[in-house]
Amino acid sequence: MKLQGRDLRCVRGGQEIFSGLGFEVIAGRALAVTGINGAGKSSLLRMVAGLLPLAGGNLSLEGGDADLTLSEQAHYLGHRDALKPALTVKENLGFWRDFLGGEAADGAAALETVGLGHAAHLPAGFLSAGQRRRLSLARLIAAKRPVWLLDEPTSALDTSGQGMVADLMTQHLAEGGIVLAATHGPLGIPAQELRIGDAA
Image (cartoon, rainbow, N blue to C red):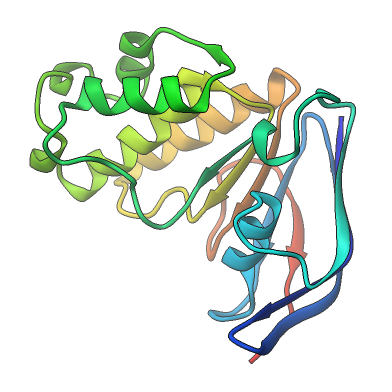
């Protein structure tokens, strides 16, 4: 499997964020997207996820499911943890697993993996910022998709949480997945680097 972007151009609010951007990442590999604030790291991930239109260039996923779009084969984990505070931790994860479809895994096991098994019955509104992040990460396990698009995946996490994220990514790559992660710091795993220039 290979995820590729060619001559990508991003325009937001009538302003060009970047242009002429290209990358290639194959199965079992991670690509760390770096650059200053405002360079377009998050915008690139959102374009790959199908949440922002391409202003130019093209994206392709070779070796994936030909019946599905790239966005249908990707998990996007953004800055905000999309949780419903009145639903329990277990109910939030169940919603996302059903919504995302694909190959579903055991939700209870996913919560245990991210360290939230003890909180499954709690309303998500009671969670700390780090626990909310852990619940979002559980979606990656509960509904399997080959491409992970992670925007600052370790934000709000303590040292043990950061290690857990590295372990999740390592396992995903070992299973032939792809990781594309926007980050200001080390990912904790071997990764190629794509630095986006100093865009305005």
